[in-house]
Image (cartoon, rainbow, N blue to C red; front, side, top):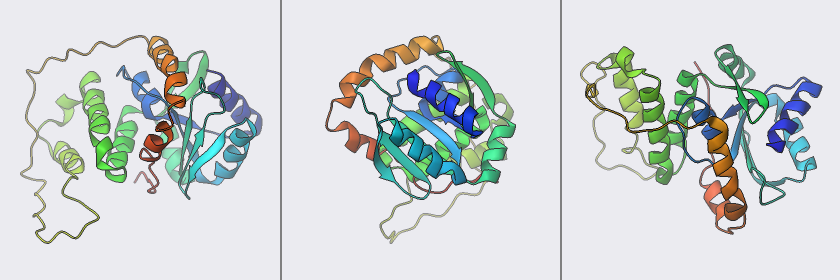
Length: 240
């Protein structure tokens, strides 16, 4: 993966930090699923430097806000890039629990499972509803594959997670019949202890090679950039 090697080398030379998030991070934690872009988390103050660098590599700017920017790949076989920017103190919290992984020969940091789930819940509230099920699927599989459920089942923490998932009542349109918010103390998730997963975890590089094989096709699709724009997360994110 040439672009990831370039990012790692540039970051090392300029003493800039970044983390791989999104689909690549999900796959690194054991959930083998498709991804068609490379998502990067950076401290907000470094955004201009990274933006200038990737544009210098031939990438073109697709979308930009104060907290997020997307870049179109210069070649059909290259990974499109999404950069999410957070406050330095939030990035430090991510870094304190980060996991080092090897992605096609490049050593990088990815968020802990807990922090990755937090990012996914944030994305579910920030994106269009059409993307909700993909992010929810990531959350469910990350919890299940990493055996987190036994620690939170039927607890207040699990209830709060359920409330975070249950965002479909919110809308930009006026709600003339607002629904009462549930009480954390009585909200529970089903036990699910008898559920058996049929999911098969594949080797990380094998999954990415399969994804890369599809890049040339999807990058040539004129609708792909429109789909990526719907994937943006431009709402500020903080870890408290």
